[in-house]
Amino acid sequence: VESLEQIAPAELILPLTLFGRPLDRTVSWLKDIRAVAARLGSEVVFRPFDRTPIASIQERLRNRLSEPETLDPLVNCAPENLSALDTLLLYVDEVAFGRPPLLATFGQEVAANSLVLDGATRRNLELLETRLSGERRHSLLGHLDKTRTAMGGRLLREWVLQPSRSLRVIS
View 1: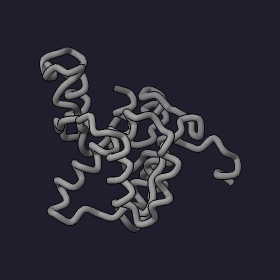
View 2: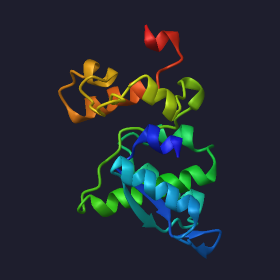
View 3: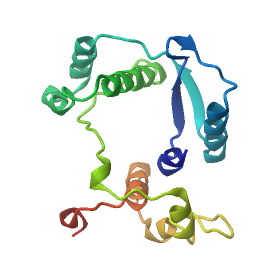
């Protein structure tokens, strides 16, 4: 749940089945996830996570990349990560009105490269909003954000929520 609060996704994709059985949408952990999603304004979307062979997933990903060699780092990643990426891209295809974007590059996030701040720390430091009024304007992000595009704003938000551990990156 804290990871969801940290990422604050616009949409949350969940499986239709779990361990080969239809997902019971009344279980408490799913209710907790839906409550957090509602608080964040995230839409919960259910999609099938199929068991496509890894070689087929890799081929489909190569066809989506403008520079197919960027897939190389993901060749050795866990099959469930590739399957999740494939499910995500199939969803993007579905909502892209027949014009799926060509990807330039992508990679795996490595938690060791950045600090992980729990929800209480983010709230106490008022990174995204103030504790009393809940306004973004007087938060750290509100003071720092002079970005001109939505993408720049999202990148800055990511940097604030997951500050780098690398002195080289910070300098």
